[in-house]
Image 1: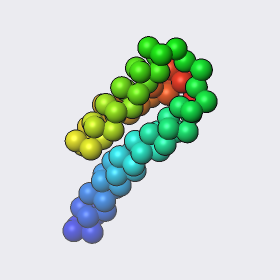
Image 2 (image 1 turned 135 degrees about the vertical axis):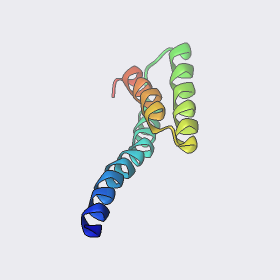
Image 3 (image 1 turned 30 degrees about the horizontal axis):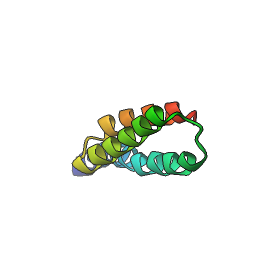
Image 4 (image 1 turned 90 degrees about the vertical axis):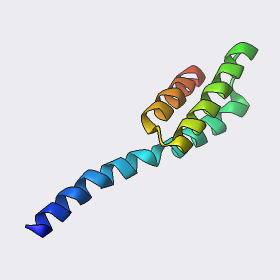
Length: 79
């Protein structure tokens, strides 16, 4: 019984930890695309703002919010 409970807890925690690690991967993709991006100044500032917001939310533990902001920046960059 204890083994089953331990396994259930483990299986519930592992996916959450895996998704929490995707934020830095998205930040790295944004950073790689920024130097060659052909956006206007306003859009470039928005992308940088969304990137900073995503990083801040990730540090605060809000991974869903972080990914939303970061994915919006990615879509603006076309990646």
